[in-house]
Image 1: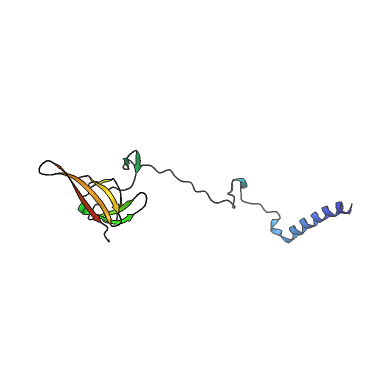
Image 2 (image 1 turned 135 degrees about the horizontal axis):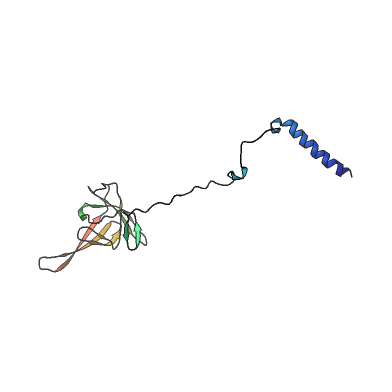
Length: 155
């Protein structure tokens, strides 16, 4: 019976003590219109991403779009190999001397890719450079294959 009387008395005493101790809780109104629309402070902020428009200047090659720059019809003597990536799929990184991008654009070369004016094919990518084979027609109207090695060069 004493517990039944003591508990409401204790609750009343604690509530009145808090009200007396913190007077700024009495008769104050908040400027928050709808508190349920506020962000939860314990959840991280979610940023919305805007959909990027695909420009028509992107190259459609083998059924997929790519925004990587291509060497295209650049003469082989203007191509400088600046890096080699070895692994299952070998890649070479190249720059063009005096090209439209200067030396700032890096092009990715893969094995089997056609580069140069005569559509030379990249046959192998080795740690020391790349091997390029181009098909030409000689004076006797016969096909000849010229193998060119473009070594890795320092910038």
